Length: 278
Ligand code: FE
Ligand code: FE
Ligand code: ZN
Image (cartoon, rainbow, N blue to C red):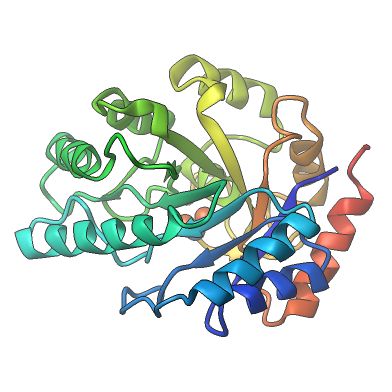
């Protein structure tokens, strides 16, 4: 069965979020643990979490993915901003460790004129401080579109970070289809070659999740503008090949498309399920 869901809000609690997922025929989902700009996380009650876990088990939801606030920058120039990224991620992982089978995705960071090498070593030391032996949650680095000074704009930059991590068994990669397309990888005409390259540089065993998005922009645009499935420059056919590809089809897929309501996501989920070869 296709593991597919979308980005949901936990503003009404974790149980309410899992019910939202079930209502749109999602069997996995992604969420922000707090305001995406990095506010304080709402405390989760044991009762809410127990009901959440029970519903997930009942509905066969075995994987959920949390997304770090997108404002965090582990390789910021300013020490206090790096500390902020550290504190928030530490706190998020404390929450995530209460959710079995959870994964945590983050944007590696922007080097802001310090250069890729300086930025990369900052991200490495950030992760080495965050990933402790007791951590249950798998931490995912997201592949980026290469907007501004984003690190992770190609597979080698992602691998350069992974290579520096001591406990790298707890690290994986989340491939965002809009981002890699805008980074210049031709997943429309050359999916095989792109996956071969991913395997050669990072290793496909590291790939733990896919952000399934269409893109408003042509290949190589480096702008990072998501589009709804089938309405962008990647197109439905290419996205259908991605969910059915033998190397990818068992992974969890997350829609981050600019839908305004749950019913919009429900339509995309139904559409993609229809094109999945059981
Ligand atoms: Fe992201
Ligand atoms: Fe993404
Ligand atoms: Zn994006």
